[in-house]
Length: 131
Figure 1 (tube, helix red, strand yellow):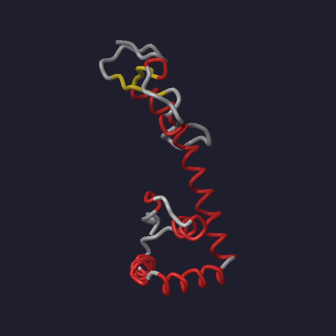
Figure 2 (cartoon, rainbow, N blue to C red; figure 1 turned 45 degrees about the vertical axis):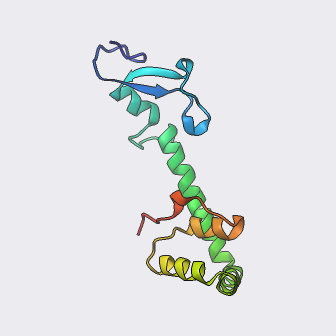
């Protein structure tokens, strides 16, 4: 079988979504390509050497959002403190759980920001893997 990009002959082809599922792409045949591992890596720019590609672009976007969240928290200390005081009064169990997770450095700034600003946070932001 041949890679649909570089046309190398190989038995190890991977299915690549032209429009990623995370961006609304489907599993329709028209959105799929059979490509070799090398081309699949290049398509997603998994080397992170360039500032382009799906993976690198997503990583850069996440880094930017994390920094923006931390900056917001730093600028709004009083608001954040009041939010936690309100949580303590209204929902003591969640207050204790969130406080313990913060103390253990298991919550990312972005998780805390989204929880305060939006009233909910994406569970994928739960653990701050940098610590």
